[in-house]
Image (tube, rainbow, N blue to C red):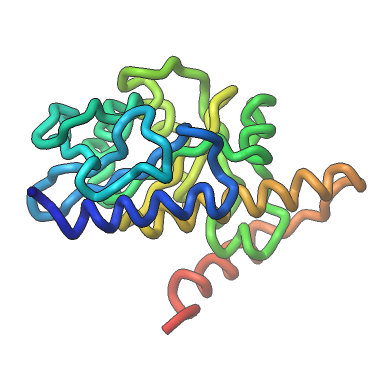
Length: 216
């Protein structure tokens, strides 16, 4: 079985999506690219999260062709692969329909950077890309376009949901979790009034500290 360790990692990371209330039923997926071979491990289509195993993960090449697996790959595979081809720095992608972030997506509205946690993780607002149908590369094209010129590892797509990226699949899952957490905070604040803004200068300082100083 190819990429046994990466299969196990991707399978385990899928448990974080329902654990963090980011998905419902079989929606959502995690993928990871192996930097050495360039092959991608991704969730099989339509399989319940509790039934996922390392063995039923699907391996595709960077063009989306199945290399190993007994199941059909996720319906988002072509878009994941498009992002990987365009972004050599990305080795992990997560897609969710998490509630609060997707609420912003239904309005075609970015999630504004009004918390220090957002400044840390995203370096600014979480951008909103355009609408695209599922099944081809079009969603991936919208994701790449939305993230261009942004510090954010994640974006939302109009009427769809969240796409988060990372240097690893775990970092992409982290970005997806933080997207929903901050979307919920911003949505709640908007029910009370108008959230106070953070200056671009302070956002830049917070993001630099988080990415260069914070942690071990």
